[in-house]
Image (cartoon, rainbow, N blue to C red; front, side, top):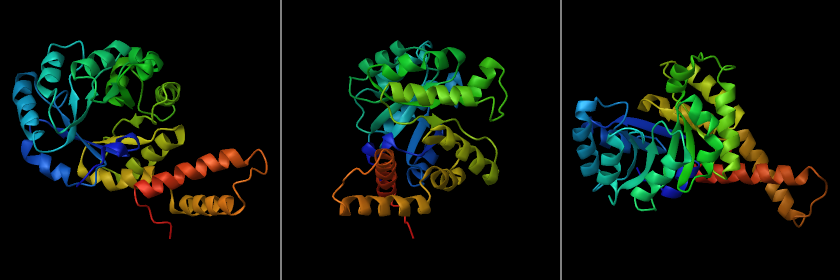
Length: 275
């Protein structure tokens, strides 16, 4: 499955794949995931990190993927960026436990100044530093490490309790002129729960979601995509706007135009049928 790099900014589903399980990489590549992320951080036992790093690097010689690397404060970070730098298939890195703008910039620079850095924010410090992280040179998009955030703060998984950190990332992304942030994964195997949690994330302004297995991908892609009814409205509005010479009639036209253009762009990018 081809995943154009320009779509990463609007990618809905980000599939995490255990970096030690090279035999699953091809299945992930052929999955409906908008982007795949080979994980050499939390998914890998410390003793196996060199093995996982090498397996991922070898695979990236012929294929493309993102890689979740270890956080800046660990001794593994330097080895990760040095081994990944220059690999032809490295689409970008997801930097674990980002807590400062410098973590992003150091990573970006060590990778040669061309590889996008997706900052995974997973702590109270990271949430409070989110605007600075979003403005950092090399920052591509923000993501929410919801599980580690709850562990760090003692917050429950209740939707209300998670509004603040999610909204903080949404606002920080706008301040940093980044695409909408990526929500943390849903652990439940229930598609109903996954669909509900995805809908809550979308309502708050998040535009993607981390996924733990391929079974979650169709649900997330559907939940985060514009509804067919919205696509119909957007295309009808844009057709009418063009037909009247793109003349602004009142103060509601510009907001509606912006919404319609965004919906139409997403519909085209993800080939969403409106009928």
